Image 1 (cartoon, one colour):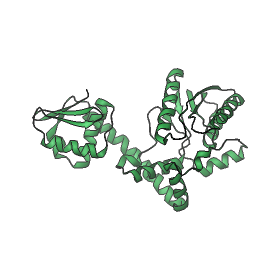
Image 2: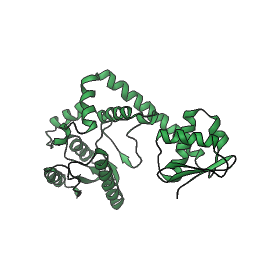
Image 3: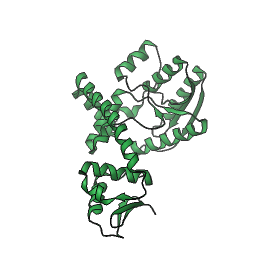
Image 4: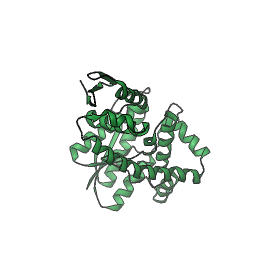
Length: 280
């Protein structure tokens, strides 16, 4: 199996790479993306390149000049765009260093933004492997110290400009080990439920037309999930919950031949008993 290992140079990705090398089970390619957000980020790229050479591994990288005002979301999209392009080029699976504390932080972020049940079913993305999800940050530190690994510290991790950094400190101060474990238990249950729900929704979304009667008479949460599945399947666009709530009202009340604009170029077109999902 060929793995494209995302390595930033931080302790998490350095530990990930060392564990994968130690397993000796896979062909590894080290991938580094330099956002160009920090003035010293080129030093991180040199460190990772040297690390790849130390292990005798192929190294691929890309630098962009995103600047200090780049958002977390912009940086994430650019990084994953690079990783996906490299994975396709090398016919490899992407491997990232997300760990158990990242799971808790991501759930916390989703809660602050307002989320449904999917906000607790995080870190499950097709084509991306995350073998450290069962490791806490403390375990990663212990491993790195035991193996005498070297890593670099990202200065932006201390900045309050990023939501994840602010929540990370709050989680560390306010949640006990038992509470963190409870969150992880909920997360694991939600992953199992998500798989089962997505399998049911896939059967519904194989149709070309959808029943207005059925959507109108199931409970609201089920109606939202069914409509979301239909839209994502047909358009790859994931509407917000407010957009879906308004669309459900349209499904119940719109006249035949009417259309309803959901957003992002997606619309519903209604017949008397059914509707279809369209994009321009």
